[in-house]
Image (cartoon, rainbow over all chains, first blue to last red):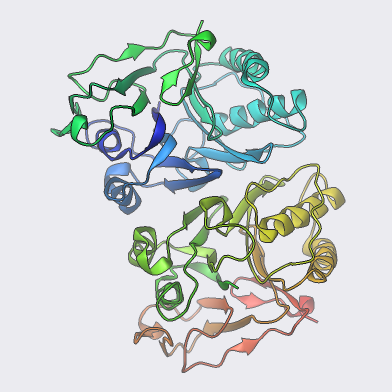
Length: 259
Length: 259
């Protein structure tokens, strides 16, 4: 099984603090040693850092911890290989283009009963069930809305429906974003926290590091962090319910899409 | 105008030496300050490092110089913005999936007379003529060969033909790879060198750095470096002829495709 970390904010924010605790799980405080990756959306652009090395031994992960890339949408993943060998093409997040936007996707869980269905537009490159599921999601969205991204109230039911179909094949916790909306689906384990004013200090579980967000933020900032398990031990994280597909925008879950 | 750097080898090789000279042109010895990028193929996987900062001021470029990623196909680009603003989504190389493989593309030149034609499968995300041309190339290949990558003798004429069409719109020096074949097209400026046994020392033009490849290589190694202008001042570089589309594989140009 793998682990997920996501961030969605109302202003571009760096993820250095959360990534430090998360990366420690890539071989130090936990066993996810089979590669890792992180996607940053910056405007329409998206850059993904990938490495098949463990996050704790990866010079690229070290760079990501040192270099504060500011983004409103971040998806990170550390991998424990199950389907597909240890190889770059099997590292999450995966990326494709749809409707003139990049989409990035990372998955935690196994879809043991997933049957591969070739699509018209999207094809996996690696051997993971995760990339197959991502291609199926984009294929389904594109079949329903061939030309342009629809409004969220039209997109959500289609995404939720294909998500529930795929979830019947196994465990399907995932993070998905196009740099405008940020989707988080839970079948077994996924939680989040929204940090906003008044900001306080937070202390990592996986490393003895504390950051006082009051010193680093403006009162109007809002940052949602989504993770497989809580990253801090002095904040209250909200568990996402099994079967729930949340949509985050500007650092908060849109409640009408979380029933 | 931008600058291109490519590498194609018969064994995975790092590009640290050539990239050091090349990156200096990103704001130090030359004026290409508007972003840069580099794509490494590793097996079926492909990772692309992008930054809209000048290469000489980019922590990511510093990482690429320090971290010897070994690859048989590398495409790098430093940008001087003409079409499209300074933004991550306009940094080369661009990447898309075709036939279950990743394709990466970088372009030097302006296609001032390019008319945008929407495709069925591929759509640009940024505002560059380059990404439009890349999408047109993949679209054309996919229309001709919908399901699988054809043998090179079938692929080459189709790629060459759409390349010549696009080249009528302006200057179209490009590098393109799918991790199996490496294509280099010249309309104005592109040259290459093949390093093989007996290896000698090479000295950069842009930095006072010499590397003795004899100490770093095996006798069977073969490395082709393709660049907008020569990177070393003590080796003989071959100019690619205007209108010529070369195919490199295993570190040498396949001569039957270079007439």
